[in-house]
Length: 424
Image (cartoon, rainbow, N blue to C red):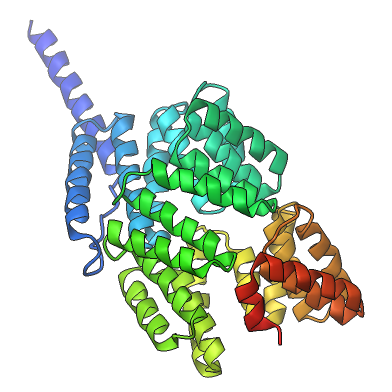
């Protein structure tokens, strides 16, 4: 009997030690304080979820769902706070821990795929999504991720097939939003608006997802030169989710179009104070450029470069974004080309990457090569005015005046407001 008691005691001690060692091997990432005024009530709810998830991990360190719950909290914070360099790697750490305990756990794999997409690891994300789709029949979110990955890799037919499957399984905000984007990049601008309106109607007013969707609808209107409609969507988003930073930034661009530059800059400063979002600073640079403040533009571009460096160090691939941004402002043209060349090797068939190559080549006065990539970028029949105007400038530089004029005419139809401010 004494022997049995001794063995039992030793077994319990070993089990306890194993539990402690498992816990020591994983330190839950910290939930950082949000910036002042950034949805305090919402953050209080997130803090409770965070504390509950951490407590469950401590109590049951082998239970995968607790790590997934923690990862979802961190992913949400990334979207709401804009602190991508911290939260996405933190979420990935949680998911790797979950997968180490259950290599085929569907939830952990789906969440990891989502993080990989956010970090622009599109090839890896596609492979993981395909792996999940073979075992998780009927998971609409998996087809959504397959759509995203294929779009970014330039596999547009596969992207359409994926979103069709998603729509059949679970029509809703996420499916309609993806359908809208696919219509937009293939030149169906009215169809893009129609699908995004359906996404807005499917959202729950006041939530982050619904606000993002309404702002996206505003962006579609804005890029078609429908400024009144864009302003309406941004204003509504700002009301439904009080002072939503992306809605504030959208309104700032409406003010820029109306030449209300000081008001635009004030709104963008408000948005940047809430979220350290690169696109807000890019918008500030656009306003300052229209004002002719070159020193302010250069200062903003230097800040943006530092932020993009931090993102890259955190695992976010952003070469195409750098190439387009630098080219737009004629900033570090040689560096811009290097970034475009890196991206084109990874995503040779994506039209945004091809556009980045065309833009950077034109900034380096390599116009015949730029034309090759520009033709590839426009093969989907895009009606994006900025792309069409770049095509016009390349054709003009080569000496093809009639072709340049054709592209200018197309751009005027696509967005007459934008063209009136760029063509004298």
